[in-house]
Amino acid sequence: MDSERLKKQIDFIIEVDKLKTIYRRSYIADSSRKENDAEHSWHIALMAMILQEQSQNKDIDLLKVIKMLLIHDLVEIYAGDVIVYDLTQRHEQEQKEKAASKKLFSLLPEDQNKEYIALWTEFEENETDEARFARALDRLQPMLLNYATHGKTWQEAHIKSGDVLTVNKIINKGSEGLWNFARELVRDAVDKSFLEE
Amino acid sequence: MDSERLKKQIDFIIEVDKLKTIYRRSYIADSSRKENDAEHSWHIALMAMILQEQSQNKDIDLLKVIKMLLIHDLVEIYAGDVIVYDLTQRHEQEQKEKAASKKLFSLLPEDQNKEYIALWTEFEENETDEARFARALDRLQPMLLNYATHGKTWQEAHIKSGDVLTVNKIINKGSEGLWNFARELVRDAVDKSFLEE
Image: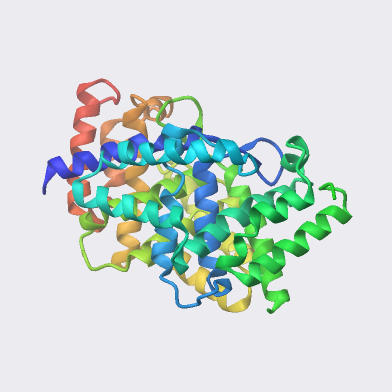
């Protein structure tokens, strides 16, 4: 056993435990508290398993989608979380996250460092079928939680239905079916006064 | 789009959000609070990605390992969590979890219900290479957290080093390398007084 290699991997595994302390804007479905990035990452990886058939390309590499989803938020350990509706902050955030990805993944052995940077970059660039489907799930999940909590985060951040549709239309690139579902959810949320028109 | 099918899947996805409210005995690595099952499931799925080469059979189906890890604790939504060191409770728990698995996975469309029951049963039976490696990770992760928190849960539950080795030797079935690592970790934890001899 290459114990130097294993030591690096274990140190990385302990370091990323910090993802459990990065809190998001979304509340968990029972409204009791905000969700953290580790829980969110688990939830969307499970969604990928269940909703694979909704991908625009049904023959996607599901393992790659799940790998991307399990690691996509790790950069927030060093860069923090920013709400998707703040476009100015999001640009600065991209730079911070790129630096964070270099710092974090370099804890791993060199071959895995390269693999994880490549996976993270693929997710960010949103060009492959796998990245597009992964991104669609990453955007749909907070909408589901918002709906389940009767619009808690939408109301706290003064988000309107037009904002939700504009910011999340990227879902359509990964899954037309899920985008149709998301649009119905927004209409229904407006009808029920969870979300302002 | 089969909207009845998608509705079932989305309802399941919301129902399993409750995994975020099932707290374990382990503390997260910074000792600030206990870990929940959703975070734990994310952590061990990520460990499977990073440590695949440590599996006794290097040609395992990693996607299947990760699927098992993402769903293995879902039954605790209805059955609750039991510490691995309580052997009497663990037997009763098996019966409760079996009933819980039927109740929970039947929310999914029939084909997925069957698939998930099969995955969960495979993990529980611990006979295939995939299940054995998944189980090894599920047991190693709380040991890593215990070490990182200077033995917090071990001390609270009055666990001794012999108990840790007996209860977790199942790691050896999935990965000799990780079992050797785990034994070194226990020795080191005793030396540092994180764990009683």
